Image (cartoon, rainbow, N blue to C red):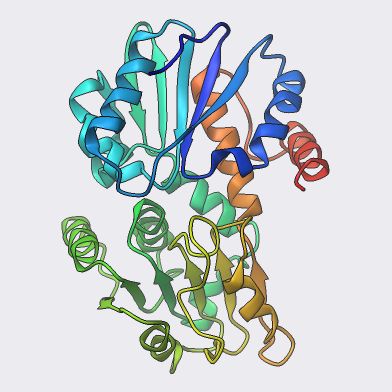
Length: 314
């Protein structure tokens, strides 16, 4: 099914990979990072695809000499479950989260990594003021219970933040199974932050969760709606929290959630962010791992990569 790579190749395992800006950005980044003659190749699966297809892709990457690794989106949990026995090494975040967002090789070993706990935190810190939670006692509402949601809730709950953590976290999802899995993970962590789990089946139900959020609260779309499928987790009647922060993990697609928030941006004094900076951190972290190079999360080189990507975004 898969043709052997003819040069060092990074794979992008997703849903509509050909539409991603990374296909234009990667060659320029490879030049700036002096990676040599290399390539990127997309592998598309439907969400929650047949486990055999995930295993086939991972087995191919493992056995093909010039297939260096992959970034995985949407399928992080399903792919890891289907293929865990194929990995020779699993990093601590992948083991904890039960997902693989990055596949790499080192010394003949196939390695699974969960990079989202790192990249989600870096992206959030790029726009949320320091000590925001301690100063406001605001809350966080996360739509979605997949790998990215696990990662951002883990980051928000970390004890090392001290008092600078949300006063409450609310997670909403259409699949009760994923909610239960997240609840079990949070209980194992025992980080001491109140968390509510809501099974919502309609935008109207989701709208109700926005009611009563404290000023300054963070609302996240981590569902994939707006990119992998059209739409938004909330309806046009949703009212976002005053002086809130609205973050869509998507940077492409119809971005309806972003449009809904921007319609209230001035009235509600919102800060609205799409997933672009998350995209930058996510890809640079994976490229560093797969090609075994150092890419700092800030500073001149990171700025150079960000500027190059911005020129090629559309």
